[in-house]
Length: 342
Image (cartoon, rainbow, N blue to C red; front, side, top):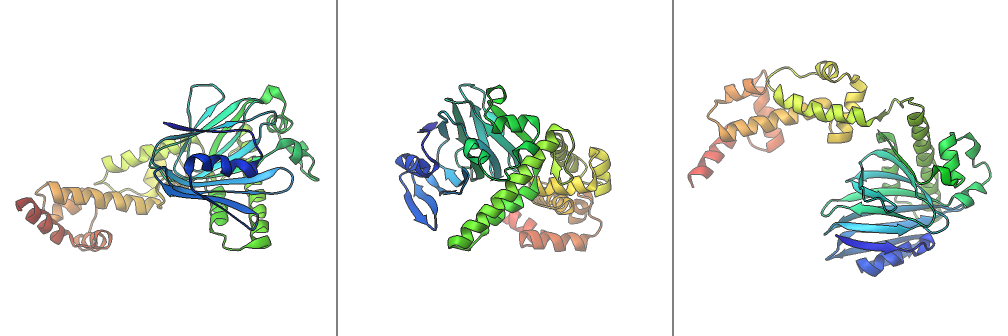
């Protein structure tokens, strides 16, 4: 595993330090700096933009060739960082603790290390990682008019005040697609100049508010209606196995809801979050994958395959199989047989 150590310099120097290892090109435009690389280390873009009151954005869209540890030395003023991963995953190591904690996609993550310590982000090799980090220097932010810090709950307020009793701080919260939508808007914003900076700053404030709200709800055990807990995510994962095991039976949202104990809304949210599909789209995909395996590996007739994957109509099966794979099931089987003979 390769390691990049970043000294506690101003955020504007972050890309220069990263580039001493990545050997890419740094471009600066409209107050935003981007490091672009495509070489033996992998490919991607890392960009930073700084705003008033100690707020900065660090945005990674990278795919490294090898596992990479980026070690940050925090110095006398450890930042408070709001992290949101919209693609891939990360490992996190706090201080000298050898334990690596997994940071998951769509999870609300807030961290702040101790003074004069280290924090480490571990990027897995050959995985596209998109992570948005709102980096806050707490003393500068406290000087902001209407910072509303007094309204935060006791724990996060203590972290903002840099009180050692609350550090290091790590919040691994619920999973939320609403925050993902805001992060996506930042990446897709094609405006430039002052308009771009204002647009990004506005969305950062929205994301910051949403992440603080989720943290507050998490600590008070008052779930947001549009978020999922780790327990909810595990139930969705378990349902994927249930669907395969019961592929020949009717599989409806009502049945899955009863099996998991999750509401229909939570189910749809969970399947979109994990599989980027609605429940019905995911069930249809699994039925088609199982049917393809039957056609390839067994001598079942088309009618038998249709029955075994729980589809009532052979004509409907042929239609959706053709739409998905670009070939009729009968032609697919002929193609497989010809290939096995050659």
